[in-house]
Length: 81
Image (cartoon, rainbow, N blue to C red; front, side, top):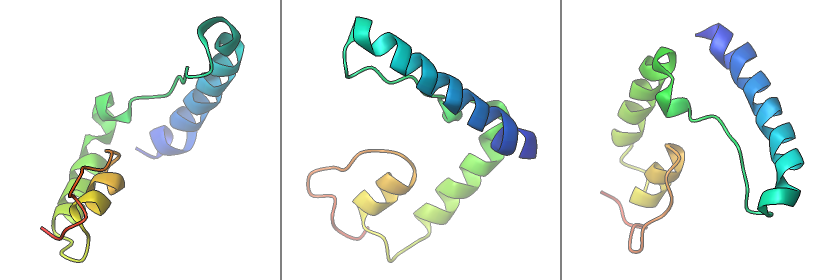
């Protein structure tokens, strides 16, 4: 897991950033290349622990919980669940 967090993901982020800069003139300013960490099986335990911590946090609103796990806000989501 340490290998992924400290080596593979930072390297992949640098490559994605470089490719984004290189391809943006051809495909437009909205282009972003990034790693989908949800698809990396080696990080599944970290992801499950994050979901559990966030779901058990009564002091966070629904939108704060969504932001913590990488999702966008919902209309009316600034309430406690």
